Image: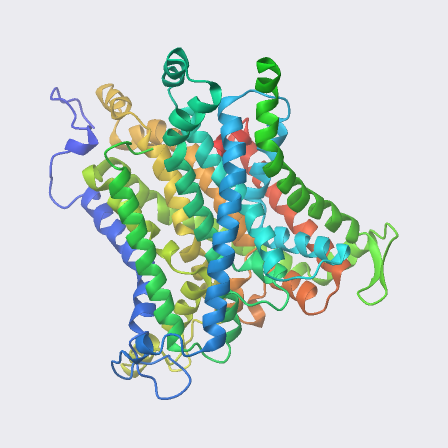
Length: 279
Length: 287
């Protein structure tokens, strides 16, 4: 680049629109990536409307809504979905409670052992799921604990706690302590200050931790596969049915979960938008 | 009294969750380590004999799968960096007011079950499916062409499933870059390429590292993609461990393989961190 005296236009957001350049190319590229990411989701939704003649829902054979009306026609699929939801609720409530405790303590206090706590949290978030599931299986087997919904829930709480704690800690760290001091100056005791001032401020973080834990639990396959015994959750049912062909109801349930998830995400995002900037 | 309560408070808050992690993460790991050194079988029970030869036998029996998993992991991670960087770059610098919308679109796959997404790919890529069948009919592809069952399908599935985990950390790192720093480089007559290489890239590296940390380990230990999209010639170590545990109930071998896998992955990640000159892996990871 030779020396020009005019100011090089590098403020990226205001780069002048040249002819079709690198920036436009990257724009198109980003959209291609998004399309690629969405393609299998589109296929999943589409084949929920398919009317296959045989057992294999693989080629398009005509539009139907019958799988939506017969959504709960397969009893074992329905009970797998219910089991998944029950475990997700139980494990996300427990991990939200326990994770909030850890996250609050790590964000607020300096204490002995916080280093090891950070280390073990980091380890649970970065260890291969396979190894965590396998090691839990060895523990349960050697203790003679029967595998089932209970052991799945224990496992899900284990891998969710650290995520909740991380989210809550981030919120507590940005908390303006002078608000709490003001409450104390106005005569509130520690307990009142916490419930009336601190807790309402960290509630959004607790809620997003809860939702994260819920999502992790509902979708979990690997750890569940090791700790389920003969219990069947939604992902395990899909896994088991893969070889014999997936019934279109699975596509419909996937579609509905997808829609519900997006709805919840959009609503919570819109509601929290005025208060916080992107973090 | 108040003093005492204050010093106890963090411990009381941490206790339940900390115990849970200890009981169901640390203790199981120790149990697994001990089991890998035991002998016996599921019916008669296991006895600790310190039989470390299990490791040698397990590794030599499943060397192919172990190496294949690492190779797939490295290839997929490299592809992930290459694919993710331009998208993260564009969103961070040119996304404008729509940044969060683009990020949301990139996260859409997370609203569909991991297993279901992978199965959906099988549907797309299957030999007589709606993608390959018309291409074959049109003579664009040879009749015996197939994608399913190949390494390409497995690596493709892995890249697909973990792409958001690479885009996000790189985006976060790029987003933090003050545009004025780049401007300063340009004012000092750095060419766009030099400005990118000397300013943007070094500042993006922590993001790339975090992305590698979040993808390399789960990718290398994955067994869903190779099971759904692969064949017997693409078997990964995860599948071996899974079947040794759940089908053969060969616990010592399975435990030894799990530990070997984890050790190899950790060594890989830490040596990568060293090579990058990241002094504190934890610090990067914690961000």
